[in-house]
Length: 360
RNA sequence: GUUCCCAUCGUCUAACGGUUAGGACAUCACCCUUUCACGGUGAGUAUAGGGGUUCGAAUCCCCUUGGGAACGCCA
Image 1 (cartoon, chains in turn purple, green):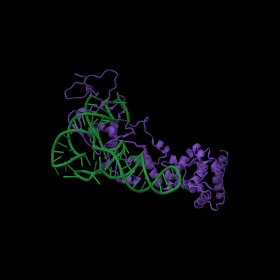
Image 2: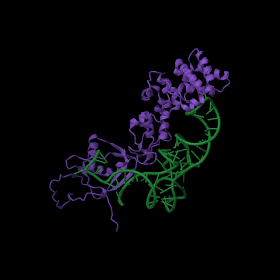
Image 3: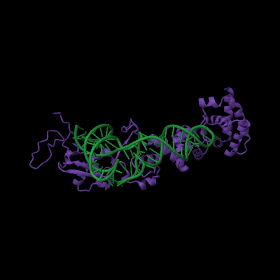
Image 4: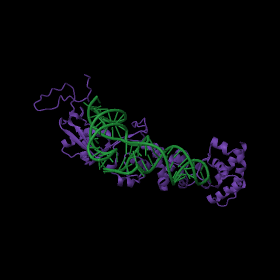
Protein backbone atom coordinates (compact mmCIF):
# COMPACT_ATOMS: atom_id res chain seq x y z
CA UNK A 1 0.00 0.00 0.00
CA UNK A 2 3.05 2.22 0.24
CA UNK A 3 3.53 4.81 -2.45
CA UNK A 4 6.05 3.35 -4.86
CA UNK A 5 8.73 5.80 -5.77
CA UNK A 6 10.27 4.90 -9.09
CA UNK A 7 12.71 6.43 -11.45
CA UNK A 8 11.25 9.69 -12.64
CA UNK A 9 10.75 9.23 -16.33
CA UNK A 10 9.21 10.55 -19.49
CA UNK A 11 5.56 9.68 -19.73
CA UNK A 12 5.82 9.13 -23.47
CA UNK A 13 3.04 11.43 -24.44
CA UNK A 14 4.62 12.33 -27.78
CA UNK A 15 6.17 8.93 -28.39
CA UNK A 16 5.09 8.01 -31.90
CA UNK A 17 3.28 4.69 -32.05
CA UNK A 18 1.36 3.03 -34.84
CA UNK A 19 -2.13 4.41 -34.92
CA UNK A 20 -1.56 6.84 -32.07
CA UNK A 21 -2.79 10.41 -32.34
CA UNK A 22 -0.21 12.79 -30.90
CA UNK A 23 -1.49 15.65 -28.74
CA UNK A 24 -0.94 19.20 -29.89
CA UNK A 25 2.00 20.89 -28.20
CA UNK A 26 1.12 23.86 -25.99
CA UNK A 27 1.77 27.36 -27.28
CA UNK A 28 5.25 28.83 -26.94
CA UNK A 29 7.01 25.62 -25.92
CA UNK A 30 10.13 24.79 -27.86
CA UNK A 31 10.08 21.08 -28.61
CA UNK A 32 12.95 18.80 -27.73
CA UNK A 33 14.09 15.73 -29.62
CA UNK A 34 14.07 12.41 -27.82
CA UNK A 35 15.60 9.10 -28.76
CA UNK A 36 12.98 6.39 -29.06
CA UNK A 37 14.36 3.48 -27.10
CA UNK A 38 13.02 -0.02 -27.60
CA UNK A 39 10.68 -0.97 -24.79
CA UNK A 40 11.21 -4.69 -24.95
CA UNK A 41 14.20 -6.99 -24.88
CA UNK A 42 17.51 -6.25 -23.30
CA UNK A 43 20.85 -4.61 -23.98
CA UNK A 44 23.95 -6.65 -23.28
CA UNK A 45 27.18 -4.91 -22.44
CA UNK A 46 30.30 -7.05 -22.47
CA UNK A 47 32.50 -4.89 -20.34
CA UNK A 48 36.22 -5.55 -20.57
CA UNK A 49 36.57 -5.15 -16.81
CA UNK A 50 33.21 -5.97 -15.25
CA UNK A 51 32.16 -8.70 -17.62
CA UNK A 52 28.68 -9.23 -18.96
CA UNK A 53 26.11 -6.70 -17.78
CA UNK A 54 22.50 -7.03 -18.88
CA UNK A 55 20.05 -4.13 -18.90
CA UNK A 56 16.37 -4.56 -19.37
CA UNK A 57 15.12 -2.27 -22.12
CA UNK A 58 12.14 -1.07 -20.12
CA UNK A 59 14.62 0.60 -17.81
CA UNK A 60 15.77 2.79 -20.63
CA UNK A 61 13.99 6.09 -20.91
CA UNK A 62 13.46 8.07 -24.07
CA UNK A 63 16.30 10.42 -23.36
CA UNK A 64 16.55 13.90 -24.80
CA UNK A 65 19.18 14.15 -27.52
CA UNK A 66 18.53 17.76 -28.54
CA UNK A 67 17.36 20.56 -26.30
CA UNK A 68 14.58 22.98 -27.03
CA UNK A 69 17.12 25.42 -28.44
CA UNK A 70 18.47 22.74 -30.76
CA UNK A 71 21.73 22.12 -28.95
CA UNK A 72 22.47 18.39 -28.67
CA UNK A 73 23.07 16.80 -25.27
CA UNK A 74 26.11 14.98 -23.93
CA UNK A 75 24.85 11.42 -24.26
CA UNK A 76 24.12 11.98 -27.92
CA UNK A 77 27.30 13.91 -28.63
CA UNK A 78 29.64 11.24 -27.26
CA UNK A 79 28.03 8.65 -29.45
CA UNK A 80 28.41 10.76 -32.56
CA UNK A 81 31.91 11.74 -31.59
CA UNK A 82 32.98 8.14 -30.98
CA UNK A 83 31.70 7.24 -34.43
CA UNK A 84 33.39 10.19 -36.13
CA UNK A 85 36.67 9.50 -34.45
CA UNK A 86 36.55 5.78 -35.07
CA UNK A 87 36.91 5.03 -31.38
CA UNK A 88 37.56 1.37 -30.67
CA UNK A 89 37.78 1.40 -26.87
CA UNK A 90 35.98 3.54 -24.35
CA UNK A 91 37.74 3.45 -21.00
CA UNK A 92 36.04 5.52 -18.34
CA UNK A 93 34.87 5.59 -14.74
CA UNK A 94 32.15 3.15 -13.76
CA UNK A 95 29.84 6.02 -12.93
CA UNK A 96 29.04 5.80 -16.65
CA UNK A 97 27.84 2.19 -16.80
CA UNK A 98 24.21 3.21 -16.57
CA UNK A 99 24.60 5.48 -19.58
CA UNK A 100 26.13 2.77 -21.68
CA UNK A 101 23.04 0.83 -22.80
CA UNK A 102 21.45 4.04 -24.11
CA UNK A 103 24.63 4.89 -25.96
CA UNK A 104 24.84 1.41 -27.43
CA UNK A 105 21.29 1.69 -28.70
CA UNK A 106 21.97 5.06 -30.28
CA UNK A 107 25.12 3.85 -31.98
CA UNK A 108 23.28 0.87 -33.37
CA UNK A 109 20.43 3.09 -34.50
CA UNK A 110 22.98 5.18 -36.35
CA UNK A 111 24.16 2.05 -38.10
CA UNK A 112 27.55 1.73 -36.45
CA UNK A 113 29.17 -0.96 -34.33
CA UNK A 114 29.56 -0.07 -30.65
CA UNK A 115 33.11 0.26 -29.36
CA UNK A 116 34.55 -1.95 -26.62
CA UNK A 117 33.80 -0.63 -23.19
CA UNK A 118 35.99 -0.83 -20.09
CA UNK A 119 34.55 0.63 -16.92
CA UNK A 120 37.14 1.32 -14.27
CA UNK A 121 36.11 1.52 -10.64
CA UNK A 122 36.36 4.75 -8.75
CA UNK A 123 39.13 5.77 -6.40
CA UNK A 124 38.03 6.53 -2.86
CA UNK A 125 39.65 8.66 -0.19
CA UNK A 126 41.70 7.01 2.54
CA UNK A 127 38.59 6.84 4.72
CA UNK A 128 36.59 5.09 2.03
CA UNK A 129 34.52 8.15 1.25
CA UNK A 130 34.17 9.46 -2.24
CA UNK A 131 36.91 11.72 -3.46
CA UNK A 132 35.84 15.31 -3.93
CA UNK A 133 37.40 18.71 -4.19
CA UNK A 134 36.68 19.18 -0.55
CA UNK A 135 37.94 15.72 0.26
CA UNK A 136 41.29 14.57 -1.04
CA UNK A 137 40.84 15.12 -4.75
CA UNK A 138 43.88 17.03 -5.88
CA UNK A 139 44.95 18.43 -9.20
CA UNK A 140 48.19 17.05 -10.57
CA UNK A 141 49.94 20.34 -9.98
CA UNK A 142 49.28 19.94 -6.28
CA UNK A 143 51.12 16.64 -6.32
CA UNK A 144 54.01 18.49 -7.89
CA UNK A 145 53.93 21.01 -5.07
CA UNK A 146 53.95 18.13 -2.61
CA UNK A 147 57.18 16.97 -4.19
CA UNK A 148 56.05 14.03 -6.29
CA UNK A 149 57.52 13.42 -9.70
CA UNK A 150 55.12 12.59 -12.54
CA UNK A 151 56.47 9.06 -12.88
CA UNK A 152 56.00 8.37 -9.20
CA UNK A 153 52.39 9.49 -9.27
CA UNK A 154 51.78 7.52 -12.45
CA UNK A 155 53.32 4.44 -10.86
CA UNK A 156 51.27 4.72 -7.71
CA UNK A 157 48.08 5.29 -9.65
CA UNK A 158 48.60 2.48 -12.13
CA UNK A 159 48.91 -0.02 -9.28
CA UNK A 160 45.66 1.23 -7.83
CA UNK A 161 43.28 -1.18 -9.48
CA UNK A 162 45.73 -2.91 -11.74
CA UNK A 163 48.44 -5.42 -10.99
CA UNK A 164 51.15 -7.39 -12.70
CA UNK A 165 51.91 -10.20 -10.30
CA UNK A 166 53.93 -8.93 -7.38
CA UNK A 167 55.59 -6.10 -9.25
CA UNK A 168 55.28 -2.72 -7.56
CA UNK A 169 57.59 -0.47 -9.56
CA UNK A 170 57.21 0.16 -13.27
CA UNK A 171 58.87 2.45 -15.76
CA UNK A 172 56.50 4.23 -18.07
CA UNK A 173 57.51 1.88 -20.85
CA UNK A 174 56.69 -1.10 -18.66
CA UNK A 175 53.31 0.32 -17.71
CA UNK A 176 52.45 0.64 -21.37
CA UNK A 177 53.86 -2.72 -22.40
CA UNK A 178 52.40 -4.73 -19.55
CA UNK A 179 49.02 -3.13 -19.08
CA UNK A 180 46.09 -5.43 -19.71
CA UNK A 181 42.38 -5.37 -18.93
CA UNK A 182 42.48 -8.88 -17.47
CA UNK A 183 44.26 -7.62 -14.39
CA UNK A 184 42.22 -4.52 -13.76
CA UNK A 185 40.30 -4.84 -10.52
CA UNK A 186 36.55 -4.34 -10.61
CA UNK A 187 36.36 -3.08 -7.06
CA UNK A 188 37.05 0.46 -5.90
CA UNK A 189 40.38 1.31 -4.26
CA UNK A 190 41.35 3.77 -1.57
CA UNK A 191 44.07 6.31 -2.00
CA UNK A 192 46.86 5.59 0.48
CA UNK A 193 49.18 8.55 0.84
CA UNK A 194 51.75 6.49 2.78
CA UNK A 195 52.25 4.12 -0.10
CA UNK A 196 52.36 7.00 -2.55
CA UNK A 197 55.21 8.42 -0.48
CA UNK A 198 56.97 5.07 -0.57
CA UNK A 199 56.73 4.91 -4.35
CA UNK A 200 58.01 8.46 -4.57
CA UNK A 201 60.97 7.54 -2.40
CA UNK A 202 61.81 4.58 -4.60
CA UNK A 203 61.89 6.90 -7.59
CA UNK A 204 64.04 9.48 -5.87
CA UNK A 205 66.54 6.82 -4.89
CA UNK A 206 66.95 5.45 -8.38
CA UNK A 207 66.11 8.24 -10.80
CA UNK A 208 68.82 9.59 -13.08
CA UNK A 209 70.07 12.86 -11.60
CA UNK A 210 69.38 14.94 -14.67
CA UNK A 211 65.78 13.82 -14.53
CA UNK A 212 65.13 15.31 -11.10
CA UNK A 213 67.56 18.21 -10.93
CA UNK A 214 65.18 20.67 -12.61
CA UNK A 215 62.39 19.73 -10.22
CA UNK A 216 64.73 20.00 -7.26
CA UNK A 217 65.74 23.44 -8.48
CA UNK A 218 62.09 24.43 -8.71
CA UNK A 219 61.43 23.30 -5.14
CA UNK A 220 64.50 25.04 -3.76
CA UNK A 221 63.36 28.32 -5.26
CA UNK A 222 59.95 27.78 -3.71
CA UNK A 223 61.76 27.44 -0.41
CA UNK A 224 63.14 30.89 -1.02
CA UNK A 225 66.76 30.00 -1.64
CA UNK A 226 68.95 30.53 -4.68
CA UNK A 227 70.16 27.16 -6.01
CA UNK A 228 73.19 28.90 -7.51
CA UNK A 229 74.50 29.91 -4.11
CA UNK A 230 75.61 26.48 -3.00
CA UNK A 231 76.80 23.05 -4.06
CA UNK A 232 75.81 21.41 -7.35
CA UNK A 233 72.24 20.11 -7.14
CA UNK A 234 73.21 16.62 -8.23
CA UNK A 235 75.67 16.26 -5.37
CA UNK A 236 73.12 17.34 -2.82
CA UNK A 237 70.55 14.97 -4.28
CA UNK A 238 72.98 12.07 -3.97
CA UNK A 239 73.38 12.83 -0.29
CA UNK A 240 69.72 13.44 0.44
CA UNK A 241 67.84 10.95 -1.71
CA UNK A 242 68.12 8.14 0.83
CA UNK A 243 66.39 10.12 3.52
CA UNK A 244 63.76 12.09 1.64
CA UNK A 245 60.53 10.70 0.30
CA UNK A 246 59.63 13.70 -1.81
CA UNK A 247 61.44 16.53 -3.55
CA UNK A 248 59.66 18.96 -1.28
CA UNK A 249 61.08 17.24 1.76
CA UNK A 250 64.48 17.21 0.10
CA UNK A 251 64.33 20.92 -0.62
CA UNK A 252 63.23 21.72 2.92
CA UNK A 253 66.11 19.74 4.33
CA UNK A 254 68.64 21.24 1.94
CA UNK A 255 68.08 24.97 2.31
CA UNK A 256 71.05 25.24 4.68
CA UNK A 257 73.35 24.47 1.78
CA UNK A 258 72.12 27.54 -0.08
CA UNK A 259 71.34 30.10 2.57
CA UNK A 260 72.60 31.10 5.99
CA UNK A 261 70.95 29.57 9.01
CA UNK A 262 68.37 31.93 10.41
CA UNK A 263 68.22 30.26 13.80
CA UNK A 264 69.04 26.96 15.42
CA UNK A 265 66.41 24.42 16.25
CA UNK A 266 65.70 25.23 19.87
CA UNK A 267 65.79 21.74 21.30
CA UNK A 268 68.79 20.66 19.26
CA UNK A 269 70.75 23.76 20.17
CA UNK A 270 69.95 23.34 23.84
CA UNK A 271 71.19 19.79 23.72
CA UNK A 272 74.21 20.04 21.44
CA UNK A 273 75.34 23.66 21.63
CA UNK A 274 75.51 24.01 25.38
CA UNK A 275 78.54 25.28 27.24
CA UNK A 276 80.16 21.89 27.18
CA UNK A 277 80.21 22.04 23.38
CA UNK A 278 82.60 24.97 23.45
CA UNK A 279 85.82 22.95 23.76
CA UNK A 280 84.56 20.49 21.18
CA UNK A 281 83.85 23.23 18.69
CA UNK A 282 87.17 24.87 19.44
CA UNK A 283 89.02 21.64 18.77
CA UNK A 284 87.06 21.08 15.60
CA UNK A 285 87.81 24.52 14.27
CA UNK A 286 91.47 23.98 14.99
CA UNK A 287 91.67 20.57 13.34
CA UNK A 288 89.48 21.44 10.37
CA UNK A 289 91.40 24.64 9.69
CA UNK A 290 94.46 22.49 9.34
CA UNK A 291 92.89 20.21 6.77
CA UNK A 292 94.77 20.46 3.51
CA UNK A 293 92.38 19.19 0.93
CA UNK A 294 88.70 19.82 1.78
CA UNK A 295 87.57 16.28 1.05
CA UNK A 296 85.19 14.01 2.94
CA UNK A 297 87.84 11.47 3.85
CA UNK A 298 90.21 14.02 5.25
CA UNK A 299 87.42 15.81 7.05
CA UNK A 300 86.26 12.57 8.59
CA UNK A 301 89.77 11.83 9.79
CA UNK A 302 89.92 15.25 11.43
CA UNK A 303 86.56 14.73 13.17
CA UNK A 304 87.65 11.32 14.39
CA UNK A 305 90.86 12.92 15.62
CA UNK A 306 88.93 15.40 17.73
CA UNK A 307 86.81 12.64 19.23
CA UNK A 308 89.90 10.66 20.17
CA UNK A 309 91.73 13.63 21.53
CA UNK A 310 88.81 14.59 23.81
CA UNK A 311 88.02 10.93 24.59
CA UNK A 312 84.48 11.31 23.28
CA UNK A 313 82.20 9.14 21.26
CA UNK A 314 81.91 10.13 17.64
CA UNK A 315 78.28 11.09 18.13
CA UNK A 316 79.23 13.60 20.80
CA UNK A 317 81.36 15.40 18.28
CA UNK A 318 79.18 14.93 15.23
CA UNK A 319 75.95 16.25 16.70
CA UNK A 320 77.25 19.71 17.62
CA UNK A 321 78.63 19.95 14.09
CA UNK A 322 75.25 19.11 12.63
CA UNK A 323 73.49 21.78 14.58
CA UNK A 324 76.21 24.30 13.78
CA UNK A 325 76.15 23.50 10.08
CA UNK A 326 72.52 22.72 9.33
CA UNK A 327 70.71 24.34 12.23
CA UNK A 328 69.31 21.05 13.47
CA UNK A 329 70.47 17.63 14.61
CA UNK A 330 69.55 15.86 11.38
CA UNK A 331 71.65 15.90 8.25
CA UNK A 332 73.41 13.67 5.77
CA UNK A 333 76.73 12.14 6.93
CA UNK A 334 78.75 14.91 8.51
CA UNK A 335 81.88 14.53 6.37
CA UNK A 336 79.84 14.71 3.18
CA UNK A 337 77.86 17.64 4.45
CA UNK A 338 80.96 19.61 5.36
CA UNK A 339 82.57 18.87 2.05
CA UNK A 340 79.51 20.01 0.12
CA UNK A 341 79.11 23.17 2.14
CA UNK A 342 82.74 24.09 1.58
CA UNK A 343 85.56 25.15 3.85
CA UNK A 344 84.70 28.82 4.24
CA UNK A 345 81.07 28.42 5.18
CA UNK A 346 81.73 25.38 7.35
CA UNK A 347 84.35 27.11 9.45
CA UNK A 348 82.28 30.27 9.67
CA UNK A 349 79.26 28.36 10.95
CA UNK A 350 81.35 26.45 13.45
CA UNK A 351 82.68 29.73 14.76
CA UNK A 352 79.22 31.16 15.00
CA UNK A 353 78.11 28.08 16.92
CA UNK A 354 81.10 28.42 19.22
CA UNK A 355 80.11 31.98 20.00
CA UNK A 356 76.53 30.87 20.59
CA UNK A 357 77.63 28.06 22.92
CA UNK A 358 79.91 30.34 24.86
CA UNK A 359 77.02 32.64 25.62
CA UNK A 360 74.75 29.74 26.49
C1' G B 1 12.65 4.32 -4.14
C1' U B 2 14.35 1.92 -8.95
C1' U B 3 18.45 0.00 -11.76
C1' C B 4 23.52 -1.24 -11.95
C1' C B 5 28.38 -2.26 -9.84
C1' C B 6 31.56 -4.07 -5.86
C1' A B 7 33.30 -7.39 -1.43
C1' U B 8 40.95 -11.47 0.29
C1' C B 9 45.43 -8.72 6.00
C1' G B 10 44.30 -1.61 8.52
C1' U B 11 45.57 -0.20 2.90
C1' C B 12 46.97 -1.72 -2.46
C1' U B 13 46.77 -6.47 -4.26
C1' A B 14 48.27 -12.17 -5.98
C1' A B 15 45.44 -16.64 -6.66
C1' C B 16 41.83 -17.62 -12.96
C1' G B 17 38.48 -25.41 -8.50
C1' G B 18 43.50 -28.52 -5.32
C1' U B 19 48.86 -23.09 -2.22
C1' U B 20 51.18 -23.92 4.96
C1' A B 21 46.09 -18.04 1.06
C1' G B 22 51.80 -15.01 -1.70
C1' G B 23 53.86 -9.88 -2.24
C1' A B 24 53.93 -4.55 -1.15
C1' C B 25 52.68 -0.14 2.14
C1' A B 26 51.91 0.66 7.21
C1' U B 27 52.86 -1.35 12.32
C1' C B 28 56.08 -3.92 15.95
C1' A B 29 60.82 -6.40 17.35
C1' C B 30 65.94 -7.26 16.50
C1' C B 31 70.57 -6.25 13.57
C1' C B 32 73.55 -2.40 11.21
C1' U B 33 74.75 2.74 12.58
C1' U B 34 77.88 9.22 12.99
C1' U B 35 72.04 12.04 13.65
C1' C B 36 67.96 11.12 10.42
C1' A B 37 67.58 7.59 7.05
C1' C B 38 68.89 3.34 3.78
C1' G B 39 69.57 -1.67 4.22
C1' G B 40 69.01 -6.74 6.57
C1' U B 41 66.19 -10.40 9.49
C1' G B 42 61.74 -11.66 11.75
C1' A B 43 56.54 -11.15 13.75
C1' G B 44 51.30 -10.22 13.88
C1' U B 45 47.13 -9.34 10.67
C1' A B 46 42.58 -11.39 5.56
C1' U B 47 39.02 -14.79 2.03
C1' A B 48 31.92 -10.24 5.33
C1' G B 49 27.78 -13.98 6.91
C1' G B 50 24.60 -18.09 5.36
C1' G B 51 23.12 -21.69 1.95
C1' G B 52 24.09 -24.65 -2.32
C1' U B 53 27.23 -27.14 -6.79
C1' U B 54 31.71 -30.30 -6.40
C1' C B 55 35.80 -35.69 -4.36
C1' G B 56 37.58 -30.65 -3.37
C1' A B 57 35.39 -23.52 -3.19
C1' A B 58 38.75 -17.27 -1.78
C1' U B 59 37.60 -18.91 -6.74
C1' C B 60 31.06 -21.18 -9.66
C1' C B 61 25.45 -20.19 -8.25
C1' C B 62 21.69 -18.05 -4.75
C1' C B 63 20.34 -15.15 -0.46
C1' U B 64 21.67 -11.69 3.46
C1' U B 65 24.61 -7.74 5.08
C1' G B 66 27.73 -3.83 3.99
C1' G B 67 29.88 -0.18 0.54
C1' G B 68 29.52 2.63 -4.12
C1' A B 69 27.27 4.61 -8.66
C1' A B 70 23.34 6.20 -11.88
C1' C B 71 18.50 7.85 -12.42
C1' G B 72 18.66 16.42 -15.77
C1' C B 73 16.82 20.26 -21.88
C1' C B 74 24.96 18.74 -16.62
C1' A B 75 28.91 16.64 -18.59
